[in-house]
Image 1: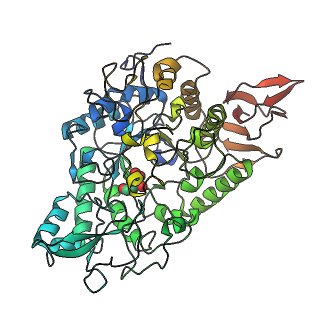
Image 2: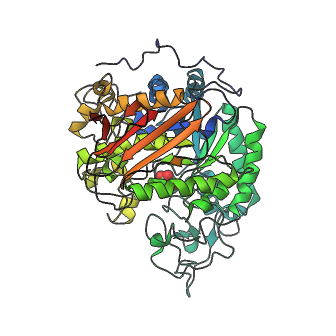
Image 3: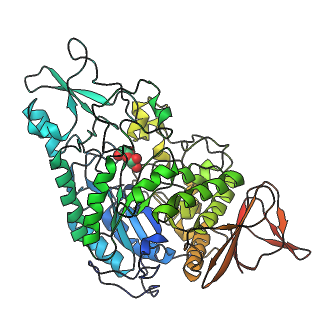
Length: 575
Ligand code: GLC
C-alpha cells in the first residue's frame, strides 16, 4: 500500500517531450486543441509540497511531486501565484510579476519546474493577476512617494475624496473583501491626500487599464513567461480590469449580493474584451497552443462565453457549475445551458467543483444547499459519496475539467480552524462574517502518521495551517493501492478518460430517459459510445445495464439481471 512518490521508473504514459516552445506530447496526446478536453490540476503552491521544511509549500516541492501528477493522469497543472509578494492575499497581491517570491524559490526553480513538467508530458499554466498589484509594487510605492501629479498615479485609480475635506470615498463601491473599496492616502507632506481604489484588500490597488503603460507592461509580462515556456495563463479577476467611465456610484450598500446577478460598473464591462483580443495575438505568436483561461465571475454563462470568442481567450471557468448543488434537475440544466452557451463561440465548456476560494465540494455536498462558503462539516460520509459521484459526472462531460489539489484524496474542508491561525484577508475585513477560504487551503497529506504527513520533509515539522489528525488516514500513501479509495477512483477515471475519446470530446450530451433524480446521458464518438448514469437520490435505483461497466463511484449490485445504482453514485458504461 505504500508508494515511492519520487519513483519515476514507471514509464511515462507518453514519450518525453522537449521542454521548450515546441508542442509537447501530454497525457491527452499532442493533438491540436489539447486544451479542449484537458484535465487541468490546480496546485496551490503554499499547500502542495514543502521542499525545504519551513512549513510553506514551494516550487522545489511541486517539482518533486510532478511524477505523482503525471501518474494521476492529468494533462496540465495550473499553479496559483508564486511571484514576489507580501502575501496580503496569499500571493494574489503581486509586487514583482517577473520574480519568484523567496518563500517559493527562485526563477531557476520555476524554469526547472517547467522543464521537468514538459519532460513528463505535463503542461504548465501560471496565474496572472492583472486587475491589481500589491501596494508594495514599485509603481504604487512611487505613486505614493511622488504625490499628486505623479504620472505613476495615472496607472492606478487615485481620486480626491468627497466632502468638504475630501474625507469621504470618491464613490460608493465596496470591496469584495468587505468595507469600502477606497483607502485614503497620506501626502508626502503628511496631510491626508487622495484615495485609491482597491476592489479587494487595501494592499491590492487596482490598475487603471486606460493607461497605456499598464497594457504595455502586461503584454511584456505575458511574453516573459511565454519565453520561459509556460503553456498558458489563468487570468485572475479577468472580468475586473475595465471600470465604467466616471466610476459611477452603484446606489446600493449590499453590493456583494448583487455580484453575479448583474453587470457591475467594475465587473464584466464590455471594454475588457479589447484586452483579451490583444493578448490572444501574443499567445498565438508562440508555438504549442498557449492558452488563456478567464476567471470571470459573470451573471450568466452566456456572458462568460464572451471571454472565449474565437479571437479572445480559450477557456473560462464555469462557476455556475461549481455553484450547483447535488440535484439532478439543476445539474442537467446547468450542463445544457453551459454547452449551449459555448457552442456558438466554438469554445469548450469547462467544469470545476473546487478551487482555493470555495469550500471543498466534499463538504459542500455534505451540507444542505448553501452556496460556496460553508462553515459546517456536515455529514462527511454523504459528502464524500456525492463528491466521488460528482467527479465521475464531471469527467464524463464534453470539454475541459479542473481539479483542485487534494480533491483526489476526498479531502473535506477544514471547518474548525481556530481564528488565530486564519490568514484569509477577507476573514479579518468582515470581522468573521465571511472569508473562510483557509479551510480549503490546508496543506495536503502525502504520507506518514505524524503531521505534516509528508507535506514537509520532517515528521513533526511545521505547516502554515494545521492539518487535522484525521488526515493521516487520507494520505496519498494510505490510499494508493486501495481499490476503494478516492485516489484510485480518480486514477482510474483519468485512465479511462484517456482510453475513451468519447469522454471529454464533442460539444453535446444526449440525455436518455431516466427516473426522477437520475441522470443518464450518452456520448458518441467514432471510437465508440459511452453512457454515464448518476443517481442523486437517497435510494438505490434499478436500471437495465446500458452497456459494459467501466467504472463506478460506489459498488454496483446486480439483482434479477438489473443493475442497482447505489444512492449518490455515478457509473460509466461502454456501449
Ligand atoms: C481571485 C483569486 C482569489 C483572490 C482574488 C483577488 O478571485 O482566486 O484568491 O483573493 O482574485 O486577487
